[in-house]
Each structure stands twice: as structure tokens, then as C-alpha cells.
Length: 400
Image (cartoon, rainbow, N blue to C red; front, side, top):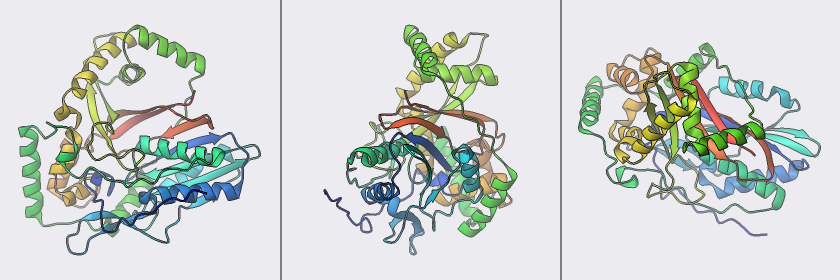
């Protein structure tokens, strides 16, 4: 059997930078529920999960704090295991997901991935639940595909050293903030420093549990049949728009909103990404279009024009990542608990209301993972993080 080489990451730390907003924010986890068309074998399943963990250092890591600098980093834990729970009632998987969500997630003590298994004879379903500090949606989809290939075909995942975005130099040229944004963040940083405060993780954890209990989520699973999807794809191709453009336009019309935030995979644009690595290599930006009574396709064309324009200008596409890079990390920690809790930081509240959308909590967002590249995964459901900024989010995956 081919062995996976494990390299010690302790001497080459990955610090938390652009992921910092996920550290002290409730509901920053998401999931993929996948149906695996293979006989269920508990021993083989455990072996596949152990193999994945050895291939990806972040699956062996907790979030730790440097004692001398206070900086957060991913710290390898030799005895850390991915928790696996076996359940019988697959129809209750959404309830199981909710129960795990209600517990909160201590990233200093709990593995960044949790798994629930639903065995059923010649097939089984597996629920991957990842904290956003582990990876983005594309990263979790890759993990699900790697699991299925190892379980069914014995394909070994390649060991990959993670290297996260550590600064503007890892982003495309011209990704730095415009002057007005620099001035706004600089002022907030100065105000934060003057306040002389810091959110302790134990204090945040109490807030997190209370917030999750008081703000329950409603989740729905919608399935589009192959014929309907094919018709949508043909329609979009005919009018030179993407399915994502169509989805954005549809949400704008159905929810009567002029703005939808979308996630964008930037693996091919970052200088640090290594093929197959775990981590967050995505950005998010708002698509704003004033509606004039158009139908979905006409609006989708206007959406497409906006998206193309944003993606042609790194300063627009990478705006949120550049904001995180310029902002004081401890200020980012204080944003959610100040705006939605009672921490009492004016600087944190200012950022939360004016930049993070926590004031109105009326946002709309879409993340489309695209096509699942696996003939072992028969079906899949993508469950998005429930950001406090959003009123409604839509997660899409194509398992055709």
C-alpha cells in the first residue's frame, strides 16, 4: 500500500488572516450530505476517513494562539480524531445537523470537521460538516470527492501542504483597497486601539451559544430534476449567460432585492494555492442591479455584465479579502459580539453595521459549487453557513 508522507507543520505556521471573520462569528459551519452508491463497510469507512486526515494537515489541527504575539494559527494535534457518529434515520439528517449547530463550535478544542453516517445496505449517506476555518465550499466538495474515490476505488489522496492567503502579495496585482476604504478601516483601527479592549474566546463562546439558541434557522432542500436543469442550461446558453447569473436574477425578482452577494472561487488567481489543499481560497462580492420590470433572462444579462466587470477588476473582486488584511485582527473578533451582543465596542459596532451587514441583517447570497466530479456520489445537498448578515441564502450543487 502506498503510504502518505506526513510533514510537520509546526515549524511552518499557517496564520489566520483572511479567515479571521469566521473565528468569532456564530454559525460559521456548513455541510455536504452525499449519497454513496457502495456497500457500507464500517472498517473501510474509518480507514478512508483516517487516510483523508493524514493527507490534509488542517484536518489534524486546532486553532491556537501564540503566547508571545497573540496571533492565531493552525496547530497540529497528534491525537486529534475526526468525530464520526453513526445514525439510523436518514430522514432526520436535517435535525441531526441542527443539533450539532446548536452546540456551538469551539475551534480551540474541537476538530474542524465532523461526520455523521447513515448506513443502508448497498448504499449509505454521509454528512460532512466543516467549520469555515477548515475550508470553503469548494474545499469541502473536494474532500467529499476524495472520500468517495478512496472508499470505492482505493484512490489515495495526495498529501498537500496548506499555504493560506497571508497578505496582499498572495492576491492578484491591484487588489489593494481604494483610498476611501483604507481611510475608513484606518479610522476604525485607531478607534479600536484607543478603546483598549479584547474579546476573550470564553466570552465569545457564551455569546455564540446564546445567539444560536435565540436565532433558529429554517432550512429547505429543493431538488431540480435533470430535465428541468437541462432546460435551464439550454436557455442560459442561448442568451449567453451562466446558470449562476440566472440564479442571481431569479433571487432578485423573487425576493424583491437589488443586491445579491455571491461567492467566487479564486484558486487560479492566488499565488499561494497548491492543488488539492484545504483552506479558504474564495472571495465574495455584491452584485447590484436596479430592476425595471424585466423577466429573468433580461435581468440575468444585466447581472452577467456586472459580474464580468467585477471579475475584471481585482480591486472590486478582492475587496472583502483586502478589508480583512487591513483590519486589526482583534477588531474583527469584536464585530459580531459588539453589533449583535453586548460587548460594547463602538469601533466593532461601526464595522458590523457599515461593512459586515449586521445592522440590517437583510442580505441575500448565493454559493454555487457547480458540478460534482464523481460517479460514486449519486446525490448531494449543499448546506450553507447561516451568516448573521443574511436573511436568505441559497446553496447549489450539480450532481447530474
